[in-house]
Each structure stands twice: as C-alpha cells, then as structure tokens.
Length: 305
Image 1 (spheres, rainbow, N blue to C red):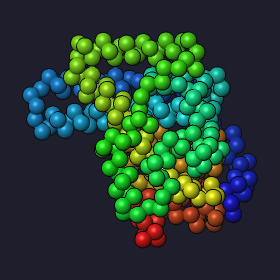
Image 2: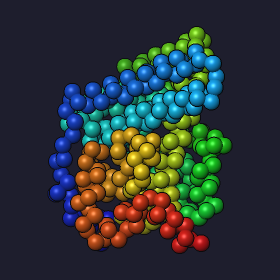
Image 3: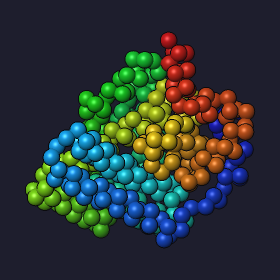
C-alpha cells in the first residue's frame, strides 16, 4: 500500500483531532518563553561562581537547555504553519508570527518553504527546505561514512549559513517586524552590559545550539531515505529514548513519517496516530516507521555496505 492509499484509509479516523484552546495555546508559548528567560538568569548566576568542572558542566547544560526551548518555539511555529496548534485559526497566525519574530525569522517565509517541503519532498529543485542543504547529502544512502559526516557537519559550523541568521524582511507585518527589531536591539544592549552572559546564554543557544539541533533533526527525520519515490518510505519516526526525544523533539513531534502522511494531525496526537497506523501491515513493514531509530539506521547502513 502506498502512502497515498494509507492516507485515504485513515484520514476519516484522524479528522477533527482536538487542538489547544486559545488560552492553552498562549500559556504554552508563555511557558517556553519563561523557560528561556529562566535559563538566561540561571546562566548569569552560574557565571558568578569560580570556574570548576561542575560549574562549566552546569553552564553547558543550561545553554543546551535554552537551545531546546528555542527549538520548542520553532516547533510551535511548525504546528501553526499547519493550523494544528490552536483551535482558533487566527491564533495560529498570530502565534506563528510572534514565535518567528522571537527567533529572528519570518513566519510567512517559513510557511511557504515548509509547504513546498510537503508538496515536493526530496525534490531539490522545488523543495525549498531541502534544496539549500543538498550539499550535505541527506539523500545519500546511510553508511558509516555518511553518518559520521552528518554528525561532524555542525561541529565544523558548515550548517550555520543555511540554518542560522536573521531575517529582516517585513513579511509578517509592521508589528512583528517591530518585535523582531526590538529583540535584536535588546540583545545588543544586553551584550554591552553582560557580555559573558549574552555570549554563552543568548548568542550561543540562539545562533549555534538551536540551528545545530535543527540540522541533526533533519538528519534523523530524512537522512538516507529522503530520495524514496513513495512518501511512506521517505520520512522516519524517531523512536528513541526519552532524553533524546526531549533534546530534539521538545513538543514530542518525533513521529515525522506520521506527520508527512497526515500533516493536519496536531503534534499532541501524533503518537496516537502512530499507534493506530502500526496495526496496518504496510505501515508495520516500514522499518523506519516502527523500529527503534538506532536499529533502523544500523539496518540501512548494513544494507548499503
């Protein structure tokens, strides 16, 4: 059974899954923002201690934690793109624009690029998310060499041009452009008065850790299979231990194959949809759908060697 046939079979069952209420949606955004600010304050506090192995370890953990919170906001932008976050459509737009502004991005551009990714998955000429990262070879079969390349790429900073930066367009309107500019000015002024705190707990999480998590997540989602002809074979569910899922998928949206098959299913229900799909033989036969991720990747690498 193809991905299209599977979608037709389950679409009615997954239709109308509940989204967050208006209040719940904004509270979730507020919680992520509060966690970012709390992380920055904690980092500033840790800098007041004499450097030791323990304090350095805690500072690294804090910086990574802030990066995961930023990724959580980015995941909310993704959900808003599909109007699957809030039950109120206008809130999806407002929240998407706000979170994009706080990440120095543009919701409208993100939405256009992401919808092209769904429409033309793996077609580098038309997939505006995958096209810019073609040189990283996510379409290549997974071998020990390509896995090592995907692991090392962010450590060398080769991904930063495609995954980091500031979008100064006004595509989301004057209000959100103003919020974005106010944020950048605030970061600049904060950096003057608290340079170490800004460097380690604002700039590093925002412009390195967050983009690195995004790159590695793209690898987990698609590496080695993105060139497959059928969409049932072109994405991967990341069935990994809880710490890995919390690091890369703070919104528990690790069921990327489910998402590509049913993009309107809210992130909070992706696991429920995965369980239902797992009863289907064609879905169950896809190792990247049901196997623990490390096993499916090892199997792919073994098949390619």
